[in-house]
Length: 294
Image (cartoon, rainbow, N blue to C red; front, side, top):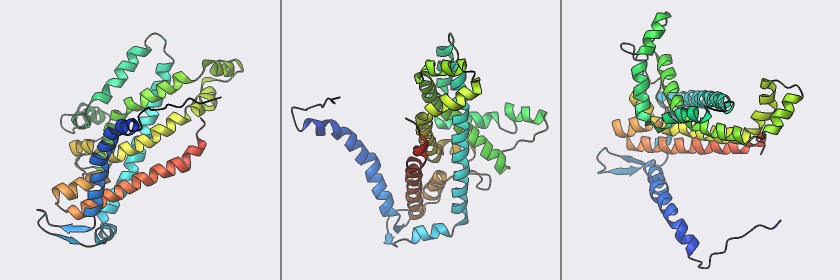
């Protein structure tokens, strides 16, 4: 089988087509990343009038800060919880919608809408519903004897931000899971049903293994989402509180750099966060991808 090759008559045309994307990457990613790495080795005053090169002191001081070590632990719990909850619920919804025939498109449209909501709006929405004074969900919990107050309880605050962040991501995961389910040949499922396999066994032995590429892709995306794109949700709901119970790493970068004006420490934290995400992605591709069946 021969593969077709695209030949450009002008040798400069491929570079011209790539130039806009490369420019965007260089301006909005490579340059800020280089500036953050440079700033992580400096001690600067809040007004930028003076800077001192201090080598790795900013990184070493992070290891002595209990609140930073706490943010790493909080981030790990938050990221795993968001990825598990959002992917689990979206897979359940996708399986049920895929089984529908007439109303599939209608339910798909309804489930996609939340993805268009801005993260800060999603955070405010769930903050209102769980507000201990006026929130309808807080009132419903009180009927069952559950006292909800995320302003004083770290556990309640973590549950709130996990639910808000997961709800925002469910629509994205749902679309990919539904597309993956629709790509599975129905003949395989029908053959397993004829052989006597029940719905759960068919899903466990046929459907889910064939969804492994989609699941792996969404796992990487959801981990990155939880560690980077949930800043607005944290800021709108708990602002890292109470008692730093929801102070994830990306929010601490903002709190120390923008609010605390500790630019060197904030830059070092951003570099560490970027390195952690890259390391997690490499680990996922190195070990977890082995279980993926393409």
